[in-house]
Structure formats: structure tokens, C-alpha cells
Image (cartoon, rainbow, N blue to C red; front, side, top):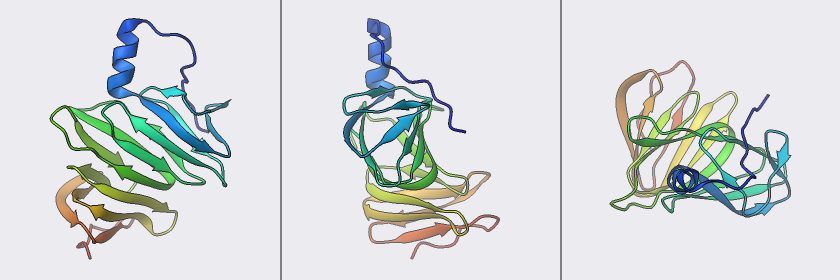
Length: 176
């Protein structure tokens, strides 16, 4: 069951600055998406730890505090993770996400985590998609990412025009 804390109340100045830096705003919503048991709407603010479930016909566009964009496609389950070791963490549990990372001096590192792969973003546009039997699919549209297994090990670079499958219980292959 997806569990989330959702922000709808007015916040103090300290919380607002944390939200701007670590949170996200829903800038577009089609059909239905929820956080916990609450229906989301355009303009809602999300905090680290909030989870989003997009309906089977929906789509959600998020703008993260530093200007990064994330599009969650129909049937996606996603969590805006808390920062760890100076990196913003996004967790994809199910479905497909398009990530546009805006490289700037203020931007923190970004990691997209799934059950089978961690993708370290360095300034790019890419797709991460989960298939229940095949694992996680990564496809880079612009720039490059470094993929590694959640358990560690060596990283595989995936550059513009390349893709990679991160399969359960298998080492990472080469990007194609």
C-alpha cells in the first residue's frame, strides 16, 4: 500500500525554503493521481517522502525545486525521495518516468532508483521504465547517465541514443 504525507496546509518560512529546494510542484495533471488517499491537483506541492500513484489513464508533470522536470506516465508509482549524500533521490516503483535534469551550478546531483538499478544523472534527458519481469529500462535522449546496481559494483555509462536493461539478479550489461 502506498503511504504518503501530503502537504495542503500553509507553511512557515523555514518549511517553504525547504520545499522550494527539496520539494516539487505539480504543473500538469490529466485524469487522476493520488498521494496517499488524497487526490492531487495542479499547483499542489509535494515534499520529500511523498509518493504519487498515477491512474491508468493519467499523466503528471512535476517541477522540482531546482527546475528539473519529471513526467510520470499512466500507471506509474513514484516517490520524491529525501536527499542522501548531497544527491536528490527519486524512486520509481512501477511505470515510466521521463526525467529532464537541468544542469546548473545550484543543482544537486540526481539519482533515480528502482529495484534493479540506480541511475546517476549528470545533466540530461532520459526515460526510466519498469517491466515486472524484465527489470528496468533506461534510454538516454540527451547527455549521459551512469547506471549501477543498487548493491554497488562498477558503473555503466549510457550516452545519448543508447539504452540499457537492468535485469533482476544479473550484472549490468553494456549500453547499446
